[in-house]
Length: 361
Image 1 (tube, rainbow, N blue to C red):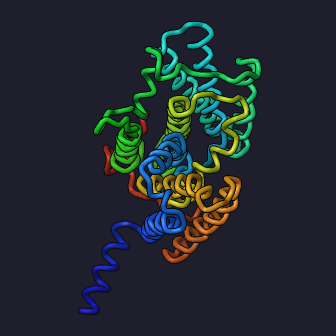
Image 2 (cartoon, helix red, strand yellow):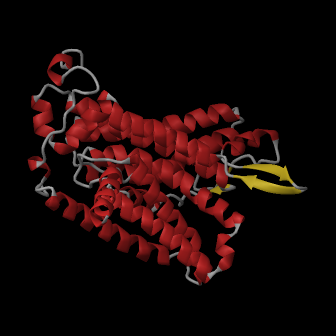
Image 3 (cartoon, one colour):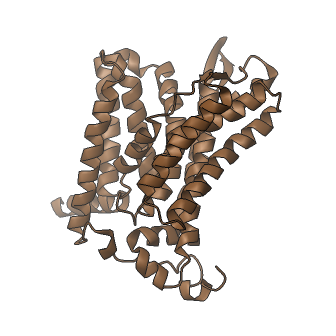
């Protein structure tokens, strides 16, 4: 009986992943502890607040998972979110652009910044940290310049132009009471499922994984590494633009200085969920778990009498712990912490082998 229990336990850990399982248990524990300290935390409005905080962080985190899986990083997603929301919101409110046009522009701005990052990292050979740090400063400045350092208020839900807010949250009459329904959770889950399929079940995803495992071996196998690495950054930037829409839909006003630090919450969620900072492995489901940990901390700390800046302390602690867990996992598998010594994963399962597809790429 004891051996069977151990076997079942190993099967569960193997299927979910040790670090992901620990993160999931930590999420449940944190929620229960906050609820025990302050019963008001268990209320439905608080749950909606947790979801609200998870939308824009979650969308950024899903996108940056692709960049981190290649062995890189994207520090610009927070300010790209703000820049996209500021510029597109100004076009709607000050220049009378149709709302749907503004939404498309918001996403396109994010994609353009992602393309810029991809070109600098993949073709100009700039270190990802430096390239995306430069884009972070650039996007922060452009957003302020375009709006003349003024805040932007997107159309409210009370007017016809505010229909887009219903994508993330709607009011429904239940038992003669207006109840907020977090519809954005459905959108977040749909995007997460699509991202997981792309990362794990398609040729681009396998190439992105392979880049993080061993860049040089992947290149020598005939894969156009620059193209696929650029794609990873485009995905990261595009979802940062979508996160800008989520932020604008949830909050009434966009401030030019907002966005700084959002990228740290997203990256922390990615690492906490089990994605390797050295590249070669990414998990979208783990990223979502990490994001909800960050959202619960952000929403719950005020309920136990702590100011929100304590979240930064908590984020730092859990981030260091998550990276340490990643190091232990790689040591346990007999892998070196240096990316150059990581084995290359099979990249031919999602289509033809790299040698056969090299010409078409």
